[in-house]
Length: 260
Image (tube, rainbow, N blue to C red; front, side, top):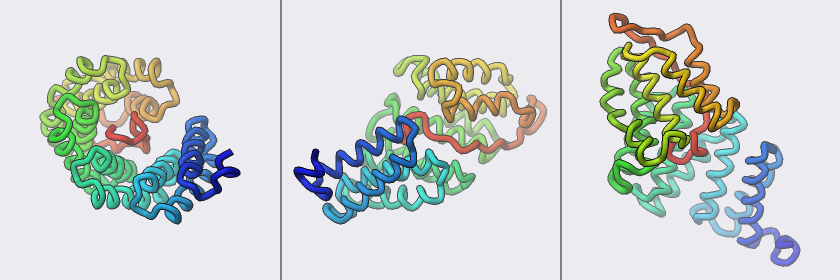
């Protein structure tokens, strides 16, 4: 209808194209969604400019979809463009900018570039604490991501990760509920740190995974990732042994690459 009455390049038409692309992605039609999101991005660049909020939103949506398809190399320049645009137009502490920082950090983490991800995770954590407070969902997700990365980046000193994690699992259960996706992810991350410290066994992680399967489904990327970790024969430190690093498998954030 909007194509006929408003034209293909009208802002309202382009928003509808973007929304339909996201809907197809959610239904699992990644190819169909990609075609529509590419059309939305191209049209919004032409009609609105590269730094318009709608354009940046569509670019981010396309990057998200490419990550879902496993095309991290294709998604990275899009995430970088969105972050640069948000910094320029919104400032470093705007929630959308902080979300973009976290998304790029997760992408680099997924690539195995822990050194590149670390400062982004730290910036996202500092920003969310400053602007949203310690008990906000995005802050809690940022705490979990940063602590989990420290555990994998410096496995010889897991106490640093435990310090960074603090009481985030307990706060997440209190604020969000025990079965909220962010709470479950933080519990899984805390269990990984406990294994690295030698104070928790894999049974603890498997209990979290069982709840993730019930809430998120067995095929959810986070469920698959921590299920694999829970079953792995690798990385089984004791209190007297040094833990070995286990890099994350590629995964999507529990909230669609927002802050977690």
